[in-house]
Length: 210
Image (cartoon, rainbow, N blue to C red; front, side, top):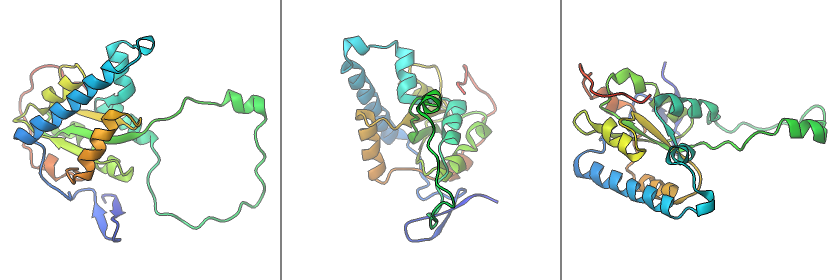
């Protein structure tokens, strides 16, 4: 049974249904990718020379690249559940000693603001699980479609041959501001219908980045 969530009016939203079933394609896709590319180039140029990182490492700091990496980051994000009444603890919680607390300190975790998906990827099942997983974390999906070439164009954003999915990490930078504008413009894709509407491809060219 697909996971169920509720919208702002309390209506149930199924992961198998989309609020907006069209994909970014044609001129809309061109404008979207050009806007993101400009923000990436601008963010790179604004980096302090002392903070300059190799290109590959910098991209990894800004994005979760590939289906496997996007899946890992989404799984680490806590699922969004309805607020439940809290009850006071039965016993006071004893804080950890400073030495123990310091040993358990981890690097700050960064979740995803949104996920871009090539809806015409081959094979299609590679990204089939992402809509329901993202929906459970309330992470919006942006579907791209370009006559079986969306993964090629998505890969160009991060200097790779292909990329089926790219997650935008929530870091509060210029790239996030652009994605926020896109999402507030009601151009987000939250469902799975777009993936289902694409026929399974029989051939693939080049390496697929998973």
